[in-house]
Length: 195
Image (tube, rainbow, N blue to C red):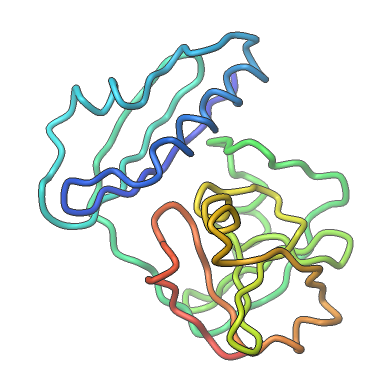
């Protein structure tokens, strides 16, 4: 049976982007199990004693039901280099599967201070654990071909803080900086590196 993960940001007792996470859970369950509203994230989180201070990752493993819920202290990883790695043509990661075997295989030789940038058909898609944001002339862009359309990416596109662009191996050098976003890394926490 397929299992899926939601990673939710908890900051000083406030749960971030819960509607976006709920929407993704709903779509996943409907797609794989043909049912609706099997998991209510708000009710699941109400059962927990959540820390009132600090930044935490709430990691939920689920299928048709919640299998586990962990609340873990969060420390943002730092990186100073990137390495482009192709993923197989046709590889689909449009749902947040718990099985990340392919990603682990592709990145097992990557150094600790280097982020893997995945490409597919020579187009940039995502980082190992995050969507990509590129800076150019004071504006922020994200590839229009993500493997996973993450919740932070969806939110930033909807609020027009970033915009989609065709970003490829050929034109990556036309951008000035690169950063990562995901549910745990909002726009104000992006650590950019020079390209």
